Image 1: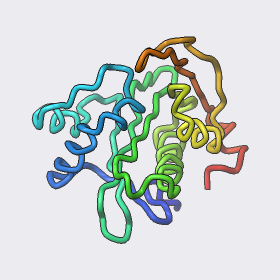
Image 2 (image 1 turned 30 degrees about the vertical axis):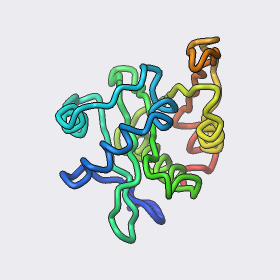
Image 3 (image 1 turned 120 degrees about the vertical axis):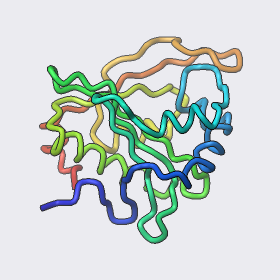
Image 4 (image 1 turned 90 degrees about the horizontal axis):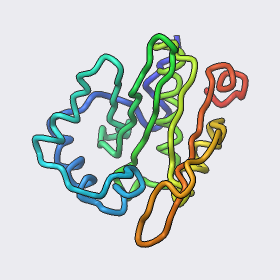
Length: 182
């Protein structure tokens, strides 16, 4: 039986108390937050972050991304907004640790999350939004088999410029048939 939450170099886990400092640091990184969220950047309090670390809803799953060799947290993935009746959910990822960005850990983590969503939760469709200026994320999603389904034109204004927010989706059979699940 395949291990769904374990990749070659990373594994997905729950959050631990020791993760709080790293998440607070990432949360205060304005550049990172502007890639991840359309809301104006506003650092969260320790209490807000602790509350976020525990996904209380039955339609959300949140995992820490950890290096297998030392257990260090480097980011997180989320599966939320699940509509169980329709077997649809939203996915997102953030590699907060700057030293580990660009090394394929995000792709490995997303493969684990997709396997979990499609094999364990039996979801049919996953979707996400990404800002048009986040080219690294767009390359990641397309490499995993996500299809651009449309754009919310000039959705976001940052530093006086307008940017699209693109909608991407992937269906369970597209993911399985693509050979990208392994």
